[in-house]
Length: 257
Ligand code: IPD
Image (cartoon, rainbow, N blue to C red; front, side, top):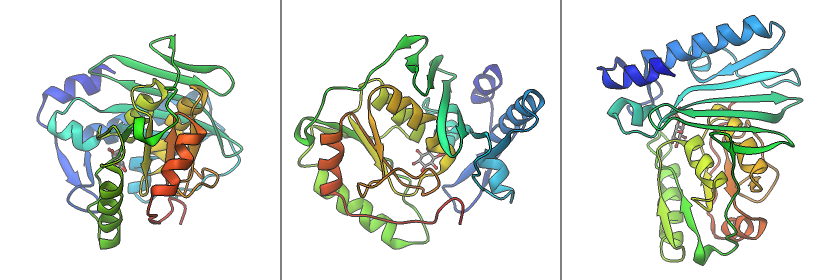
């Protein structure tokens, strides 16, 4: 999207939401408004969940109705600093099941797309997860958004970092949950987990990862729940289970609480 590319070069108008590292810019708000307006014109009966609409107090409720779940800029902190990992993320959910995902990284001109049963693509070319099955051979991604009013969140983060750093090939952080999921889908990263993320950060990415042949589950090993704020995705079931065994768990608030 031209708008986001242009705005990246300009001075941003930044506001804090829940805390000093939970940021929003006028571009996040404008992109979300434009997307909801265009989609609701085409699909007047569909529902919407958007990061900025939720921040403005609109109830975040997932029903069985067709619902578009939008993150107008995933990686807002990156966008604010001009660090190039940010994207627009749109997931489409029916009967509470994510069925379509579109992710666009404006600076790289990367378009990731996936539809349930139809595969996952990067700029139109099919993508697949890696063949990694062992943690000792894995390059994994974590996210470092752990500043919170709950000190336990940071404690669990550092415990997991201490456990994993000595036993994996490497640890990376991208600064955008859905770009991270795109990396898992294209085989560049082998796994990713996070305990306090949101439905709009995961909806598009989880279709992409499963359609690329990967696994998306709850970090404690159970079924993935889009509104739980928790995700673990991996290139294989074996790798996912090995990661689960090594993780200390953290439970933050649900999006629909
Ligand atoms: C955040 C980013 C970040 C992740 C957070 C997300 P936002 O989304 O994806 O990498 O760690 O959990 O909330 O605020 O940039 O849309």
